[in-house]
Length: 425
Image (cartoon, rainbow, N blue to C red; front, side):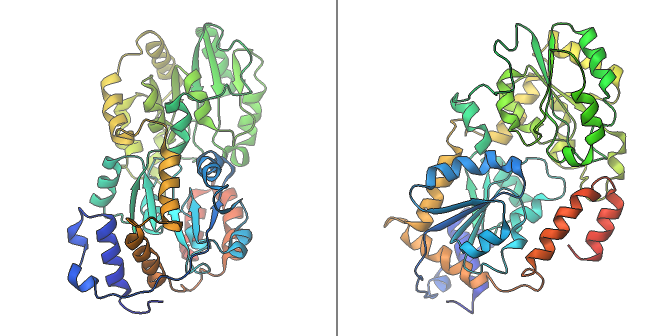
């Protein structure tokens, strides 16, 4: 195992996985002096979900690999640590649970949302391989200085595979015959108190929308965290008695399955807006005036705020009514801007093979052919050289406890941010 030249090893592997980034690579002749014997790799893969909704991202990759390798799919950190996988696949940026305890494990990040919210840098820099949805996304990350430890994999976005491939089953919550010849509005608010539209769009507003547009269905799909933070609001939405309104009670339900049945998306700062671009249908975006008070997650230069010309922006109920009317009768408006951003998000990877591409890369790390053998050996040696115990990372039980209670502090952002800074989270 390498104990020296870890930085050189990193630079060499980064050059091989990102050959266009010559500024990041040191002298190749020097790098070839590094001699490391690859240790025996146990062919074990763990998939860890931080939240229930990440299942739709990780499960397709798991289903491809589970019959070839010893795989674990779990939400339990302790199970992952006991399993001691060679490869760990995450959709969130909670690598800190594992890095100090799994020193010879390669961590792969698949991403779960396109919005930055000041967490993208941490997610990318903490992983070994970062899966991104297009070449543009990779180059943008590099421009911002967000570099994974070993490299980027341009794979596409897994939850959209079924939509792009056309292999999508009707959501069980939708009744037979839906949408009954009517247009459908999909409402997908985010959870953050300073970003969400949930506190502004009340039950009586939905009733007024249905009165104004009798030929309109509404599907309400809350963010999973809203079931913790906004139980009162969700309860009132659920009690609306109208067959045209469908409330998705299970907040962890896969939202992407509703895309083909929606003619309009209404959201705020949710990442859903970016993936709905694939449908080339109208998007309505609520601008919460309190967003500037958010100190932790608000970045005015991130796509969720800079790209809002993809949709109709609204700040109150009257503007929402006008935006719905425009979206119903003139869906072609904003189509050019939607296409522009769609190309950035997806590039040409709209073939429904994102999960397969990730599986192929993972398979190569565990069972390399002759062509990739040298690359794989360098990857494993680089990880072993770079991984070292970091104070605090081994206290994963404390981190898990704090993360659980931390979800309840999301309604008090200033207090949550103060606590995170106090304990250097």
